Length: 309
Image (cartoon, rainbow, N blue to C red; front, side, top):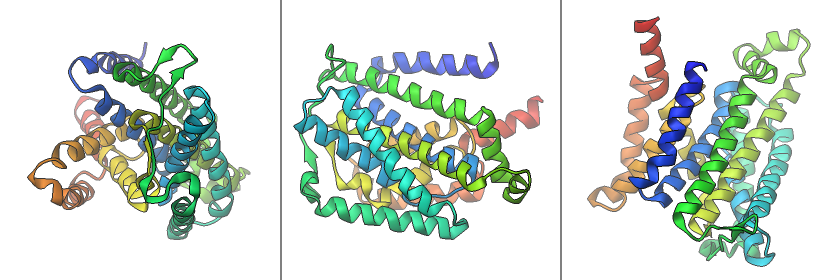
């Protein structure tokens, strides 16, 4: 067993024991955003594409899953799969329009498309506009597991997160992932070697969108709510912050970044500093960019290489 496998096993054991110390719903929220950040990092950290529109996929998964749970009577896993598929389809469309652009033009195209989706959901009757979908039933997974219990819900979310994390880890360490890194490092060279660069970018975009939608679908069940917050451009900004704080281009960094940001929001929003939460997050972002450009995990990996290699 490699060191990375041992670390992953240790972290899984910690995750299984965590509800004995922390509130399960809070932990489930962290896992949802961790999966969202990991999905975004697949695109930014391993392809080099900065998307300002990933909130569209998070919100689409949430809205579709919530609508199906309220109106169709589907079991949770089928509703989540449908929401994930809807996010992947939207990602396929966005990707076709965006991947031929580079740099700031790619970012602006994704932002414009995401804002279009935001205004569609604002006006669409099934989303209830600014009121959002409330009272989304959690149902019974596979017709057997009652998700109304918070602890059971947490372990269900943990299983989904582990699956999503495994998909990302497997993708990054596959031959396909090596080509993505080659495109990130030197796109012209990858093109000269005969790779259809835009096709690889598009596939990575679809995978990232699908996993973001999976996170959104799961989040809707956890909070029994789907709202415009999940499709707002602020959410796209938050996932960028999570990824940068944790470590762009690292597998586990976005998980740490998501945990850090969600914890900070949770514990500061209810106190006297609640009105200044966005200012505090901005300060954290500036400090991270100026002093810890590799993020928390990136800096730890660099320290390990410099001192123990």
